[in-house]
Image 1 (tube, rainbow, N blue to C red):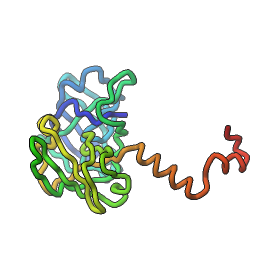
Image 2 (cartoon, rainbow, N blue to C red):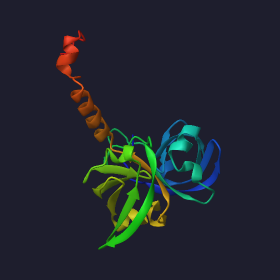
Image 3 (tube, one colour):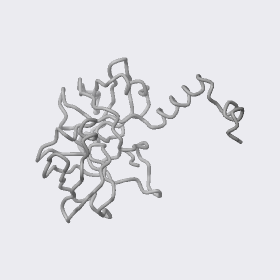
Image 4 (tube, helix red, strand yellow):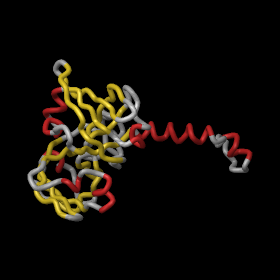
Length: 209
């Protein structure tokens, strides 16, 4: 589990089918082989590391669902270590399980911030609501507004400067993960509408208290 607060921007050293090597410093502190690491919002398992980089295996399913397959040596990536149980949740709960990719469709200034509009698949937008959370390339962002094809977020200067959002251009592909709470609410609502509730389960002999 992560928070969507990027700790460091790393640099891809090697990207090949099934394997990714990323140069980093800050996020390596306290990490050992087998630990999780969010790379552009994708939860990967660290297979090996040294003082200046870590390696991770990348499954084909991950490549299909995310933009990791588009990475090349020299590309910069957002990095975050997993949330410690006694740590701060500065963003929102992010699983590191990318739902789909989206596309940056527009950038416009808004005072000292920047409005960024992202086009997304309908099955992602189903869970997107105004003032709700969404993770873009692993960055916890608040939805400013949305429609049937896209959503907009307002990105403060600090976030742009300390993540790869400063390098994103119109047309770039980004990783999207919707708020897990929105998924649970939607699932519960569907269950309620189909008659699946505590009383129904009790009637069917499930012994629900």
